[in-house]
Image 1 (cartoon, rainbow, N blue to C red):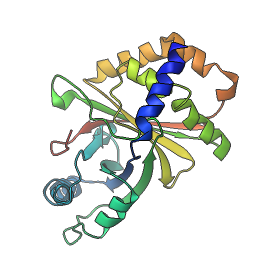
Image 2 (cartoon, helix red, strand yellow; image 1 turned 90 degrees about the horizontal axis):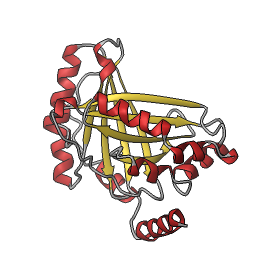
Image 3 (cartoon, helix red, strand yellow; image 1 turned 90 degrees about the vertical axis):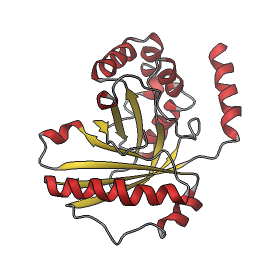
Image 4 (tube, one colour; image 1 turned 120 degrees about the horizontal axis):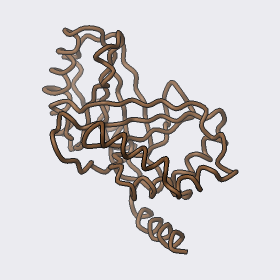
Length: 237
């Protein structure tokens, strides 16, 4: 009964909140010169322009795996209040100083029903140690995909992450991207040990074992990608 009351209260609170739109721009690069040009463009050109237009809480992250990968990446995460703001800003951003890179991917997302707004992480310690974990869950059919989204929302997975202190930044459905259907979400941690400890607690949690064991939630994820990242010096968080 307590869980039902909590979920009802959450539903009432989020009904008045408009779901945010997120754009993830994924830049691929291969060498130090391209990385330096990307850092200069994003940190000194694009992000200041977005700030002037009124967009805040912009995140820029580099995978920890960049150190050894041939295909290196930079993730730019920009939140918009709604679709209207996204389209309004789209043609007002600078492109005359675009840097050289190998290729660019763009993913558009819409926030979950029960997590309609981005939440800035509450982290402590050295910023250089912070770990941002981006997860992408793909499903083999639209029906299974909607089942996984429901598992996060009404099923209680979001509230479970909150209870266990995962410092989630966002949860969202992919509206346009190269791999669909899928959802994405980002959690954050003080350091890698904290990240590993949180996931150990999660896997051992009785509520998670009960939720993941329900027959209606079986085999709703066909592929999961996990990207561990650090924030850049010019990221808003």
